[in-house]
Amino acid sequence: MYDDNYFMRQALAEAEKAFQIDEVPIGAVIVAQNRIIARAHNLTEHLTDVTAHAEMQAITAAANALGGKYLKNCTLYVTLEPCTMCAGAIGWSQIDRLVYGASDSKRGFTHFAPNSLHPKTKVEKGLMETECMQLLQQFFAKRR
Image (cartoon, rainbow, N blue to C red; front, side, top):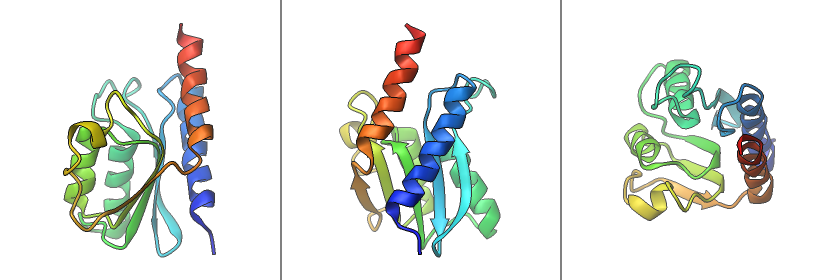
């Protein structure tokens, strides 16, 4: 059996992939029955698509893997608190659980749209927060 730390490390590995291709380093994985069914990282620059956030890419891949739009009995692990757009998509997908690493005081959904998730979605924050934040800080320091 894998645990939350294992799955967040997998999301961090996705964030590293984004970092390597000069995308904002955010990664996500979606898990069903203790198995990763989707992996994704930010692709907004490469796809020239403002909606190509890690969460959006993962939700689409997971829906395809399951053959349906609802992600009940799934957990999304993401390295940064989702924005309001992603939170809306998470809400529409009816995902059971959201686990995120670092909080986002500038664009995070908890600050701007705290009720955007499905009412039954359980949220856990701060898992491996330091590691998630360090990668983001390293990325933005490199860009300055």
